[in-house]
Amino acid sequence: HVQLVESGGGSVQAGGALRLSCVYSTAVDNRYSTGWFRQAPGKGREGVATIDSDGTPSCADFVKGRFAISRDNAKNTVYLQMNSLKPEDTAMYYCTADTLPARVLITTPWHSGYWGQGTQVTVS
Image 1 (cartoon, rainbow, N blue to C red):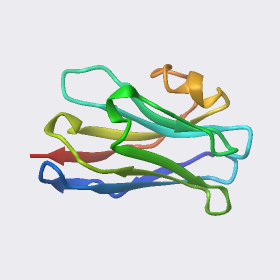
Image 2: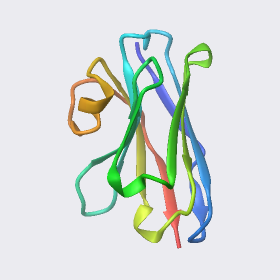
Image 3: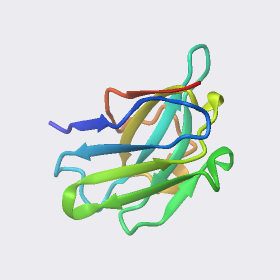
Image 4: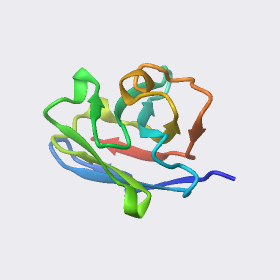
């Protein structure tokens, strides 16, 4: 049974920073890309950043220069460092894993891979 467990969400003021973490089961091996999607109330799910097992990232245009994704394969953990947060970044953030390449995964919000339960990020 594959599990992805997110942490690190919270409430911050605009301009602040948060670091999201997602610990995933060991079954998520180097065949999998991992990453982050988000969904705000009344909006669709959108890809934020994804990363291949070799560390190659893919990031949405709206977070370039502000967010950074990284992955520690030894710890089975993927991170999302979020800086210069804006109110429009408010959403539920979901960790995900799939065998799609990261550059494809980021554009596939309803893929059939694995999802975490989500962690709320609120920027005011």
